[in-house]
Length: 484
Image (tube, rainbow, N blue to C red; front, side, top):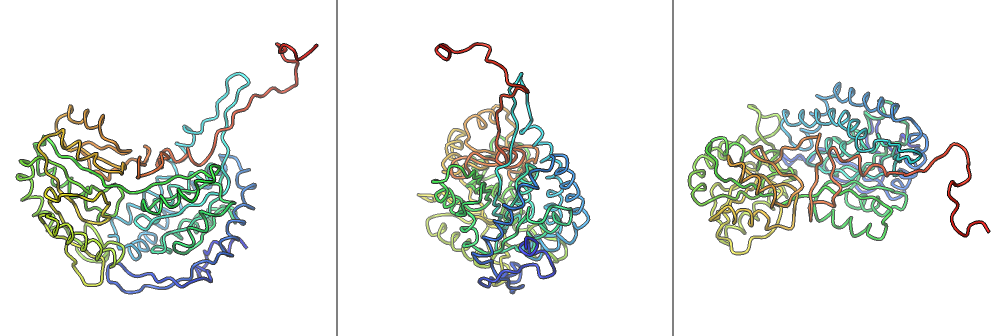
């Protein structure tokens, strides 16, 4: 029963609900259709995960670690096939698809290390602290990193002894299916990982389900806030939200403008701007804007964008859907009408695709700039008169995921770090750069203070405090009035 619910045979999805079409982002052609799972199938998946919980959580940490290490080895063996699936569904160049696969492998060892540190068993006298799994955890995955990001929730959740119901993005069902497929091949007990496919209704069914004990979501702030509202009345259900950001990148007092240009372009346009930590706003002085603009525009125009099989290999592929490309182009048009000056216009490269040549807009003259995450290759430039104004502009957002400073002045960075409000703060490195050995998450509308990365162990188990004695003894100091 549970094996069929994991949809991991040649017939990789067995839903019997609505048909969903998966469209290639780089040519606009329908790749295939699949059927979403019905409410009854989702119910069966959750119950199967609940039934598998006692046997999986009853295994020792060493046993669970050994299985996950075998899973990591299987990822290595299938790296090329996983990368090909990613390129097909998401449009990632081969080099970036392989980078995502390698991150999946690395997550296992990092999760083992994190669990040993964040969930360390401790004893002081007869007082003990240990950790228990929450139970059945639901993981809702995104389309931009359909393997790496859900893997970053699933691995620590399983390591802690939870079972998992995994719902991928409806845009990337085949890429994400590699995770449960290889976990079962590594020996994970049937039922401990359940894969359910579908769109919004599938995710909502998991969020509402009373048997789900924990929920990890990576995606848009709109969906994340909707999830938070739905679970507000159930405080016993732990929720970890990784949302987006209107991330600032401040440039101040930099000598090597060539290095700055390359760092800016990578910060804004890697993964076609579809990383939640990508730079959305470049904040700098009027003088630096004048000096930087020629090379920034020239190199932006030379960024190689294309389908994953194009030669030479592109730097970035398409945004996930032709409709998303149209939304970004419409946003650019609206900003220009409000007074933005195009330094390099965002441009559709092929009709009915998500292939966009990145765009840079100077929005300094836009009177009311909307605090919005443009999830794609569109960078806004804002010129200011002072570093104080740059800091003020950087913090002028309801988000708080990532912020970066490019500067040769360490005092500038000390002040930037002190005053900026973000969960990821980088100095003189690309803004999307994040270490798996560190926490990953944001504040304000970018998350709910449960960062993933190295700290994912924190929301995958809960501490249990115990006072223990091997034999019953009389209390050393009877309380007044207990015996008369």
